[in-house]
Image 1 (cartoon, rainbow, N blue to C red):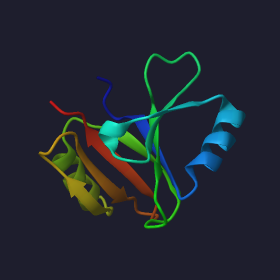
Image 2 (image 1 turned 180 degrees about the horizontal axis):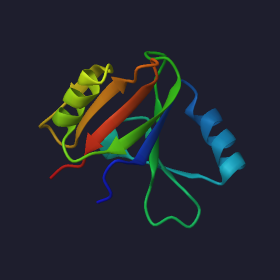
Image 3 (image 1 turned 90 degrees about the horizontal axis):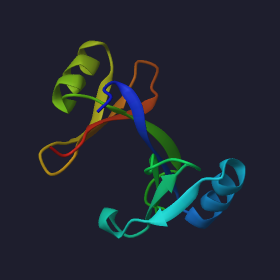
Image 4 (image 1 turned 135 degrees about the horizontal axis):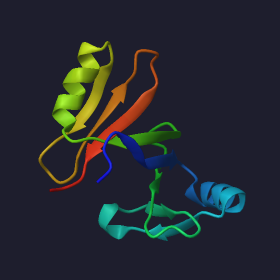
Length: 119
């Protein structure tokens, strides 16, 4: 496990087919349905990569389209405390139900995520 590095990203869109065509054509990314992650979630793989590095999900118009990176950390709760003490903000946090993760804002208002894989 490599901590404090970007190890996952997500792209959210209300038109996943269009996003797959765009990113697949631009970067050669491959998309595979991931039913265990919920309906409309696809894993994103890079050419030559051993495992997926991101996810694409269908917002169905319920959320704004966005792309966000996720940093793998040792402890999501501690990282959230440190972010807040540094002037950031925790928007959402899910801990103890699988992988722990949180969505945060940095001091400039940029969204990013942190996570710890399921133990």
